[in-house]
Image (spheres, rainbow, N blue to C red):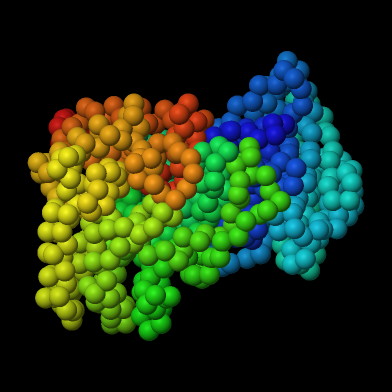
Length: 610
């Protein structure tokens, strides 16, 4: 077992309320329950010694491992090939169909021998509350019970178990050709009784039920373009990262995975950003997943409405991120005892950026509500009143410095992208008000929209760069501005935009991969550099395609796909040697992949109708 496998050496399984990472050695080294944002139970990816893990692997020095997803599903297959035989491990979590929050979640694992003989080794080492909550372990036959304050877990398996010290269990089982065994790790409430042992028929039924669930869902996608495997895998990943009871997507399944190994850019991404979720609406609608898009716009409307009478700190109608249930309380703490992934410390839990002022989120929120306007016949009275109040607040607040889209910790500036999305907020608000005939301060909104446009083109333009830049008065380029043509601020073939696109290509693009900005030229309050930002690479593809630069757009897109891991997943960034960096898998990357693919397909189809 590797002490720290590569970030890319993992697949994701989940049940639509939480998720787990499984390495290509069959090790569950990340799992938080009962929700995505709960404390970790298996967190060896952040501290091998203190984090805990659940290993099921075929031992041997000559074992070759391959991992794949069962087609169009979230069931992960890990194959162990050796001279003595071939073993297979299937991991999944039964998907939630109720939409009701629950404390009970199970990781199901089936071991098979398809040729010869193989011996599976089992190690289960849970650590509750990131290792801060001690637990009692009791082994009874082939069931191990782990009880900690507020939570209980059960390991049930065909593998003969032995207790290993005060907290852990291990075991070994040799399978012959055609035989199989199973293991389930179930998390439940503090007083939960031992569940009945699952029989072979029940496990087999659960497996095929999960296969049917995912394949039937994927079949509803209306994507008929050139990259169905990658688009469907991205769609499945977005669904795995969405909390079904509320419809809120999280940014990534993990916390603390570094943007630079050994550096301090290690954040907790297990929350719902207004920005990420809003941009996901268009991607979901493009694929025909109306129910998922409507669920998020409903969640977003709730956030706007609940603050209408009680604004957040600073009088803001929205916070930039929330927990999946809408709770705005996200204090940032540090796991002092955790060494971090390969020494990448500090390991942060919670996210202090939640209190930042990021004015662009109002544009993304209005973009989502406008994109989803066909999901409901018309806005409700209270819903529109809250939206109108949000835009009235923005009309008085948009001309302010803020921390910007990248959540820099180097102080506030007049960020150009924040102005761009403020323009979007008023533009979409005006459209909605006129379309539905709703009362609104139309003159004030229109005046704000027009003033913002002039300010962007005057103060956001750098004569030196011949481009729109990161903040007013500077010369630093910023890849977030690649959203300008999609947002509609400028036509994708406008000379000013094409000049900006050329500048971004010269200054931020490296071998088709795109940096979000240059932290050396624009200090962000943090030490160290970072890799190229995968979201920005896909936004670059989208912008190239819209500008009519079809060949470089397709080449960049196809090249970017080669940086996906072995099962089609992307983290946040790509490092200097092509390695995946940052939290994993990253929803922003996968939704932008879908956006780029659909835009590129449309442009290619127009160029070659046949």
